[in-house]
Image (cartoon, rainbow, N blue to C red; front, top):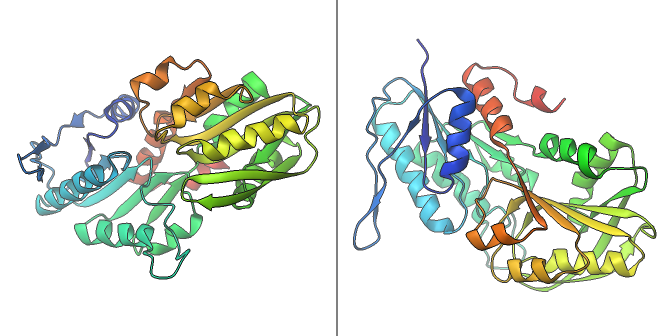
Length: 314
């Protein structure tokens, strides 16, 4: 008889708890501890022999610690004879290193795929990958879940009107923005962004007419918020009446929170709980967090029952 087991890593216990409640399946604590020298140890205190195990672990900051935790949990479960091990990674770390942008540089997203597979993962579920080609780095089943149903519901209820236009912060995000525009039958625009260094960007030109429009910027993540702040300013300077931003993964590395709080051009930013917010972020009124536990729980349930996951978005 098939049996499902949920294991929670340390990166996002609140999200893991919510998924557990939706599925009505108790969470297993992997008993993760760190030795004095920083080595990570875990012990699965539940019999998982023959079970289908789902490990919920975002590889967010501190990224390397959370990656090692995930690998060690996978190895422990493999050696405990789990029938299958699915790594549920709401945020996939190292996803921006998906190609050789310069000579003699790594493709770390591919390295992540290799080590997850070598550790013993039999499937990966993630949300809003930075680059879709990362799916091709894996030789095991890989499901990229979209946050769009969560965002679209909020847009329809709170923001969208006949004067709304969707905006991509760069050329790479146009396909993502086009998906939302198609769903809500409206126009799109794009910001011509020039990057001058790592985590440094300067918004240049607006492709499309945003004058008198309420703009909704769509992106997969916000790191230091430099790109987003420049985009908001450029839109307001080109006549936008309001600017809202939607981003799945709130990485919010320093000085992101300071920039967001001080950006008068940004009216509101809506993110999800794939990465837990720092306490200081919770005091910034313009940041709104939407929950993803429902859609991730459905993806887990359908995977366990061998049902279609893609039908969630059709």
